[in-house]
Image 1 (tube, one colour):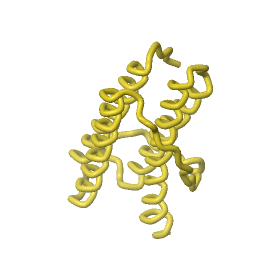
Image 2 (cartoon, helix red, strand yellow):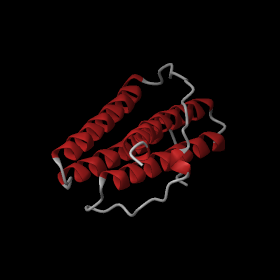
Image 3 (cartoon, one colour):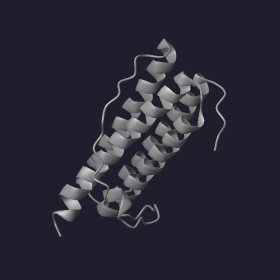
Image 4 (cartoon, helix red, strand yellow):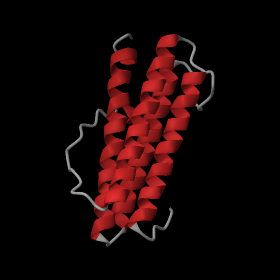
Length: 151
């Protein structure tokens, strides 16, 4: 696990992670089999750009009063098998990979929050974990609506 030296280091790491998500969804959009899938993945990429901008704002302005909220967990991500991320994924497979990515990010930030005694770092890690939890929920809802309900 990475050792963070400062709040800026945490935020830089988180912004890099968000950029990785932007790149992931942009690549999926470029390889999409239909115009609908392309539009959905482009929308996800734009949302990740917004998350990165939010982190950049937090970094530029110093610590904000970060909101705390309870995020529902449908736990779908706990029960699906994840395919390898490839350019020939269908929408269901892409959603599974997206859920896995968001779940892994949530776990990382949660563990980092538990591992620090610095109150400010803990607050930022908890905020980031909460954001990743919201991302995972979005994909679980999408999976529930477009995959589980069709079966």
